[in-house]
Amino acid sequence: KAGVTQTPRYLIKTRGQQVTLSCSPISGHRSVSWYQQTPGQGLQFLFEYFSETQRNKGNFPGRFSGRQFSNSRSEMNVSTLELGDSALYLCASSLAGTDYNEQFFGPGTRLTVL
Amino acid sequence: GQQLNQSPQSMFIQEGEDVSMNCTSSSIFNTWLWYKQDPGEGPVLLIALYKAGELTSNGRLTAQFGITRKDSFLNISASIPSDVGIYFCAGRDNYGQNFVFGPGTRLSVLP
Figure: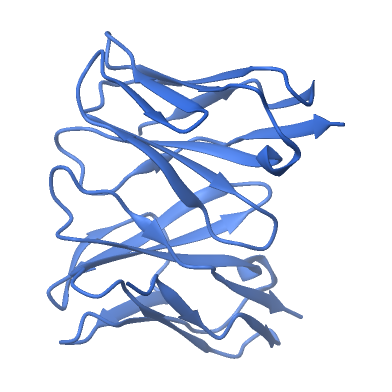
């Protein structure tokens, strides 16, 4: 069974631009969560999507948004990029987001904002 | 909000030695996960724990769900060079849908 895939793996943008990252979960997994990882803040939860609905949201500004499609694939978008948005963005998929449900991570997208 | 602490923050050990690290929470959790992350890659799930007192092994790795439900432990026996990386714990309580992650323990194995 293929793992979680994320595209692109690396991205360089400039301040003010916007970016869209993609995540394909493990086949059969319906929950996709997004995290931001930085050396200073560690792994920070962005949001979780389940059945095309945002079910949970972390403490990030509205510039960070996401969506999920009917095939469970998910995208996250960051608008008006800031230098501080440079980070490794990870998505994790799980079966249903409820009990007895481990999260499996993709390799991440390394975003650099210049 | 919920916070997880991991200790030690980093450790240097000799190849062949056993390793112990732990994770503590300010609140009660009903699920603990342990991950290992290599540079430039996503975290890889090592062990999942769902019951207080549960002890689960995965090869040379053993993890335990603390009785108080506020902590968890990970042990690695007979360490090898490929054990190098950052180990993260993650926990979730009965009310939250998302996992909270610890800051990680960076493990270095000296030959």
